[in-house]
Length: 569
Image (tube, rainbow, N blue to C red; front, side, top):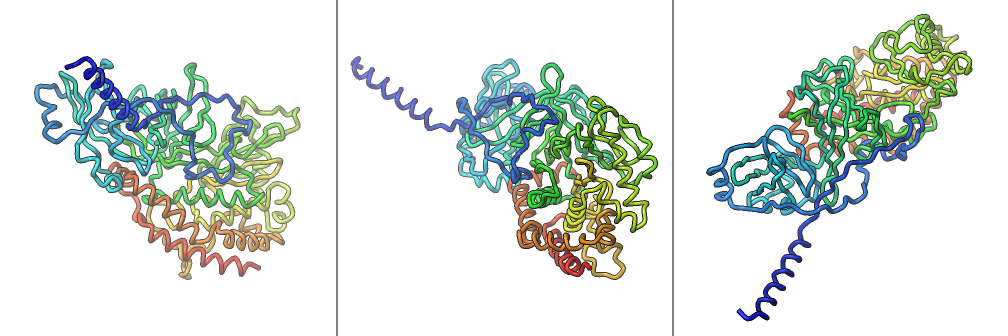
């Protein structure tokens, strides 16, 4: 062939390869989120209101980091991979654009956006146990598959990985939810107890140009009181740097923090009640000066624990001093109620400033390292709680009315009463409540909102949610302080009536808004396939597993409350 022809042919091949490379997707980000050094009490890094529960916050574009080596092949070629090669699944790692993907047994997970195209799977690559490159084959029929159906029905893609001497067949699961991995030094689930143990923590979340990846050292422990005895438990996660010091990271678009909750969402088989409750609380917080708190950050995710798929979880921020803008220097404090026992005021008053717990109450802030001394003039944090309990549970109505305004934020307590009644939060009227003393006044904030919107404590339908039978146990959820305010304190009923009008007309707590929230979360969980995978992983615990029951309960509850609140004296 003439030299000129050879040169022209080489130039054409170079141009063709360059165009092909540019046309391939660049679907990846490999990045470890940097540590942030803000103090837990600084109040910095708080998300703006409206950026809380399930907000789907927009993130910065992920940088391009290359393409993969996977290719599509017919079934015959894929089946032939096993011939003459040793089956060795443990020796392979699957990557997407350079990011190592999460794995549970013989399955890998790939977080994607809803509009992901299966042709982008050529961004996959693999390596063997020694770091050498491995080949990846995909079914040639995949690009024509109904991807939305595959995700909704949790249908994985089959992937063949091989080198000259070894091969393995894997399943690739697609999800629009983030995927979290916690790998302990001892990988068996039973080794995770209430004592924190070292772990490696990783996060994968979909980005427009690929997968965003975050990794950190951590400590993990089982959390919860009665929920700790369930088959599917929640976990507390503390992020650490290489020196073992606490490290702040902004996970899934939420605030920078080192301390996180992995909420199991076990009792409610719809898995929407908690998130609907937090979104309702967020809207009520934003619409009232009586609820001085940042939005609760909470995002759905799928969890891999050790080498096992552990199901659907909610990664959550903690209710803490940062969220409530507490200041130990002015005497602020925070308590968590962990059981139904209401302690006597005398026992509370006997507690020393550095006491960590008494009866059902755990002191969360300030801790012993920041406890102000008596000379600071801030007093004993237990004293205000003791007086609050005395007035609400021990004093007569006349004394309660005369003095409750000295120790409690009355508007906050009425807001909490209103929230509990709209959400039908039977499990939060004493237990599962945070009590914060803010500038000398007690305030209340919810926690654990699964037993809400018509769900009973055992995961069954609540028997009295309609409140139409004369034999119903209660007509309102008996939050003691709120109930006594409405009964004994002039002006309390007027405040509740005014707020009711606002949260109804402002689409904050009306039935249509609550149902729309539930449908949004329901659709997300089902379209991602996460609901089906979680149900496969864990036994069904709730008979109230459809939205029709949720919708009926909310519609009739709001109708009942509208009549009841308008009739308050």
